[in-house]
Image (cartoon, rainbow, N blue to C red):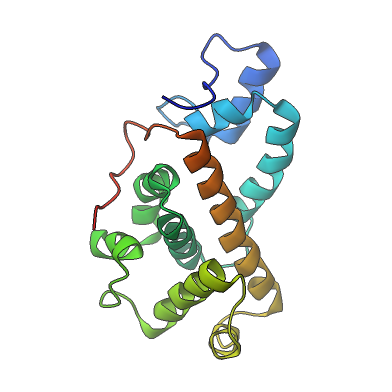
Length: 183
């Protein structure tokens, strides 16, 4: 049971409209629990949506790399909730295999290219040290321009924040989400 109960329908009209903007068109399931809890504070939810939607829909990092960053940041935070949502919703669409999505949790380097291992190493360094080493930064800079490098750091930090939020709220996994691998 979440520490803050998600809103349930029927929603106030402005909340219902706001929740619709958080979900992609044509999605068959209800708005995510995370979104319904955040709308207990609509002003905060509105501010968070701008950054979250911008990173997902208008980012400069390639979609595949974006989802590797998100999955690894969520895995390192132990956030089964958000990891499972992204694994179910985005992983296959961007080309992540089942082996790769599991490896974001287990740390297995086998399914990754050299560039993808650099992405994972950078997320690991941010998680452990709140900084990226000079060596890893240089390797990232071979593939990303300055705008992408800035976005990379914000993306990893944003999903650590989302992981902390979902974990602290003790959200139940979405019923359709991919189960978090137990290592």
